[in-house]
Length: 65
Image (cartoon, rainbow, N blue to C red; front, side, top):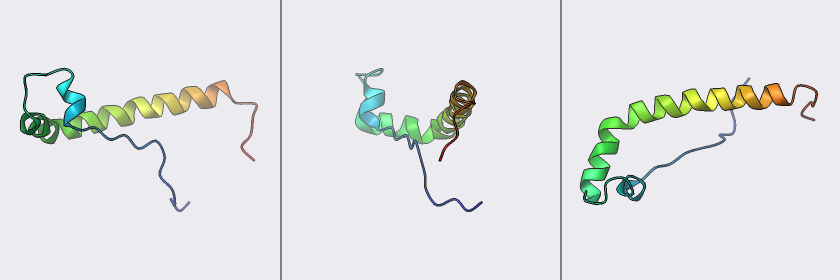
């Protein structure tokens, strides 16, 4: 099956992290994301698969038409 569309794209930026670290500069927040983006991405994908599985399990009787 060819993938033609993307769904549920998540984007984070310095202002999101700044909520938890208000004393950090934008540069510090960006550096943290650069150093940790793989961990964040891996976890988001893991949780996303769980959500997909839950939603499909709750909707087994309904087919997409």
